[in-house]
Length: 398
Image (cartoon, rainbow, N blue to C red):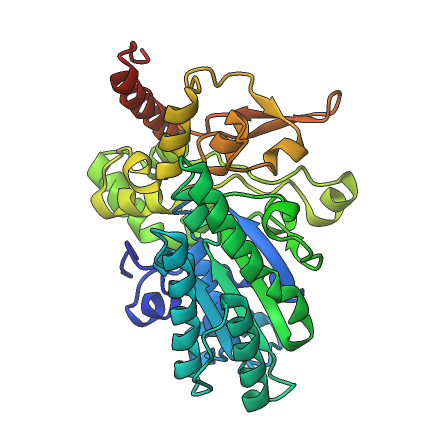
């Protein structure tokens, strides 16, 4: 019986420690046919594990992928590409100066790892350019560089209540990300993840080749778990948890759906695609909640403590948004892509942090309708309402 990978976001560690890896390589193989992508999902949905998997894939570590879909069903060449992997969760950002210095240290670390340094400390963007060119010189034109940036928006979101600092962080990151456009000919693949979807003009200005796949149904299952994946990869835990809960396996599955299922982040598929690919993509479970439930055999609210970003509480507190009024919320696709320190609509905020999900699409006004995805999130919203009521001495949600 394989182990539950709680707290592990590194692909190689999951494989080497004999933990369950929900095989996403079919979707990853489709993804890497392209070149430059942006992908947003709420916290604890598996973005960092996806980035780690992409890194090992492009480093040509075929042994780690033995038995997985990509190894059995494709002719992937397992060519070795140098990978620049920047996780903004690990970049210090208490002040704008600290963010700049920490970015440069991370680039220095990459240069040292590949023995292509030292790099002159100019600006983070210029250092990224020099590091890329040095790697290309060492590895050759056929082994172009892969750039992976995880949680690209973390320094901005951490200061969302301080508009001046948030905008200073945004300008530093914008200047850094702008260098990616000029490096296009040297890059094999670019993948950027985050929670929020800042407009291109705000932070990815000029990066025209960056394709936002956040609401593309073809990439719906890159992260998160489907019913089918739970049945395949967690079959032993379904049996054990059903026994512990004194339920039949089918009753347990229904309880899992009630508590943890229901997420949909993508647009409806066009009819032409539906006829070719079958039904709409399945809705998703939160990985962190499923892993903790199977680990403990207990149905509890794991979402609020592990996946509620500080930015959500800060913005709700700052703007006095009424979290209890969630029925019949709707927004256009343009609104869902709007997230700025100066302007954060409630629906956008709740959608991008995973507190509401798409229910349906209203063709008459071309708006998306939203709903709370599951019982766990309903309880989390009550916790938030309780937190805010204590701040403002208002009644708690019933």
